[in-house]
Image 1: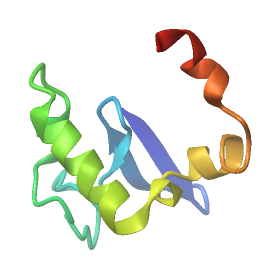
Image 2: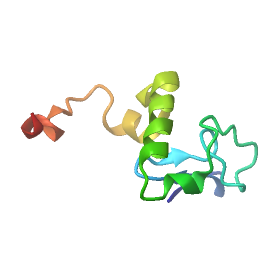
Image 3: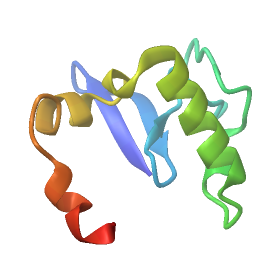
Amino acid sequence: MGQETKNGKQWASNYGIFQISSKYWCNNEETPDSANGCGIRCKDLLGNDLEPTIMCANKIVSEKGMEAWSSWVENCKGKWIGYFTYFCF
């Protein structure tokens, strides 16, 4: 679980393999004004069953694109990242 901070205070937490934000996409019962866009408890993103995580990530990409993840924007957007999958196909 990762954490997002603003002005030195915890603002939201990120959950699961896709680091889904409690501010916008899941409810951790701690993040103020959480939108809970996936209608899911954040702790459900931490279990062995990946279906809830994949369904939520799919919803995020469908609605916001990869830009929903600031780390993707900062590290991958506009860059050739094919080398990560080059030998997979």
